[in-house]
Amino acid sequence: MPRLTMLLPHYPPDVAADGQLFSLLARELVKSGVQVRVLTWRPRYQGASASAPGRELVDGVDVRRCWAPRTGKSMLGRAFAAWWLSCTGLLRALFSSGTLLIPSSPPTLGLVGWWLSWLGRRYIYVLHDIHPELGIALGRMKPGLLAGVLRFVQRRNLARGLTVAITEGMAAKARDLQPATRATVIENWVDTQAITPLAKADSAFARAHGLLDRFTLQYSGNLGLLHPLGGLTRAMKLLPEVALCYIGRGARLDDTKAEAADSENVRFFDYQPLERLADSLAACDVAVVALEPGADQLAMPSKLTGILAAGRPVLVLAPESSELAQLVQQHGCGVVVSDFDNPQAVAAAISKLQQDATACTTMAQKARALAEDRFSLERATGLYRGLLN
Figure 1 (spheres, rainbow, N blue to C red):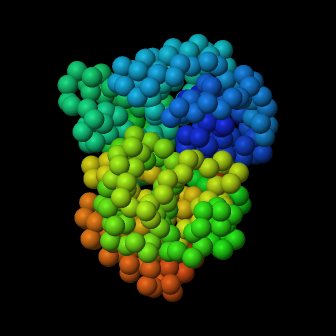
Figure 2 (figure 1 turned 180 degrees about the vertical axis):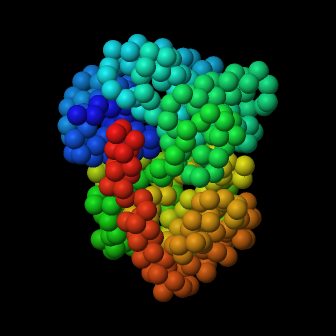
Figure 3 (figure 1 turned 120 degrees about the vertical axis):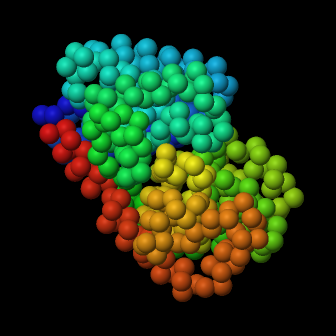
């Protein structure tokens, strides 16, 4: 029986998207005959305070948690957290068995796989973002000593394991960074059985918050630095009859709330429990995905797959050259606004969607078809099962 040990910074009940994705994969791999153990830490994502046992069996997955500090958002705090996860992760992984699976954030966690590979351990490095290039592209880091250290770490992570990238562009960037990279592309996945198209009128979230009679946009997930939301928020002042719901937290939450202070049609909600995700995703007419220029080859918003599975048209705020924009345009499941900092341009796109119910219905159907064909959990499980073999 193949054995897989996932070394994950976050795992449910933590609300981090990566943890939720890997929990679905772990469950399905167990069903396919893989013995899966998850080594993770206590819930702490963006200040989460949910409690979870130190050890439990969930859907056949052996989940083991240990303590980790809550360090805040400062650079020093993040560096300490990365050091803690990497050191404790190495000790824990050393006494586990089977192939290791390690995500790319924090970058130093990947060193666990690199170190243990010298002892003959196989590892899969899942590239959800590329550092330090992503930090530099977002203006959060300058080229220099720290960037050089992170680039050195990233090259080690890519050198000896098998790398899984979630887009072709990220795989190409990985090969540029480390020519020895053995990269394959497995796109993010969604449980198309758990998240199915639901009429807005049947959404308990929409009923509870008075959204049934208003054309509603929804941004659900991390309001992070990757996601340009200013133009969208300001556009709501031009569309008083339209509602915009932000569901989640993140580095841009406070700034977004400040920008929306004078807009009564912009509302904010906390993350919804995973078991109610299908219902909350259905509480809108159009869903929003946003990606900063410069980051489009270095990351891909994981929220896209849930939107597609829920059968919602997608409003993409990103450069037209990005893989995100090209995917949506190629499959006709949404519209792209490349001038996304311009509230007039964003408002015009929203108004066009609002006035064309037939087009929205067609986009919704194509979104669901794309989820089933390309982003299903079953497809991803088969690909990962192939890597383990």
